[in-house]
Length: 248
Image (cartoon, rainbow, N blue to C red; front, side):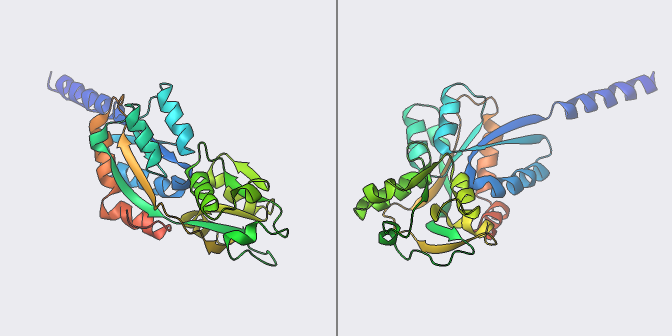
């Protein structure tokens, strides 16, 4: 009888372990390297939770949630996407925080013979193709368009634009030498320093800030809040800094 009780307890514990909670985090493509480290770090601190990561452009991730995708946390490369998510009541407004910053830069292939030194140089004949995230869904593309419009250069550069579905795709275009230059984040450039180099930092009136919030329909809201709190913790912030992100 005693052995039977022990066996029942062991089976119960095993079942409990097998039913560990899962947390689905949808994050901007530029967070890929960082969250691939932060996710396991969070799991190590909370073994009962398994983190599943989903990456894409911030706008596309928002649309997935709007269409009913089972997501618990939305981490965007801008504040505007979370603003829109709040307006549509797709996230819990009180859970929202900024957790990282970045800078928009123009990069060129590492072995490029020359590089533009300013936005105006992108309009010169020497620059034939420029990778830009699609502004409708890619925050980096919106930042780029705003900067070019302020400099009254959008029409000239748009004519040379090669649209990218994510900022990482824009980075890949440059790294493979398929374009002459591209708009990406400083953290992206740092992660591909052996293939691209920064030509210049793009002047921007709107700071690049990453925002995160619990998805309103989340079935794991408590764990989602814990993950967001972890993003602001020293271990997670140290990962973000090492990979080129700035303080929120």
